[in-house]
Length: 142
Image 1: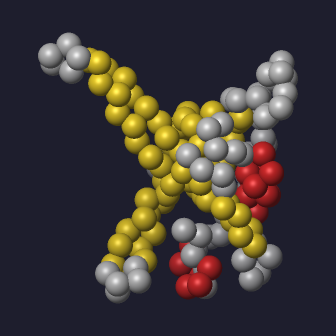
Image 2: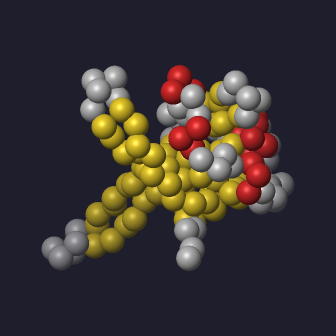
């Protein structure tokens, strides 16, 4: 079985970084992808999809330090669903992409853009919590 997601898009907000109680860190940000096509009337249509991105441990710190709003990135990860109860006591399901690899496609702010995109090594399986339900309620990464 395979659970793999590949996305290229623009970061929607600066990552929100949090160090959890057990020294695990997490970074969350949104990513916009766009699809362009012509509808049946021949009109150009652009559809934007927003994705919730989660990076753990070393990749979380990397995202905190190097990912910024508007940046173009290539994300490799896995699709996850997490059940939670909102503040109105309604059960919800959050769809998230857990990052396993990230490539920066935009130059770092303040540079002339001549540097190549930075490639980050794949996150090891040890960097992602085995069971996301073991995170204390007050430490949910969203």
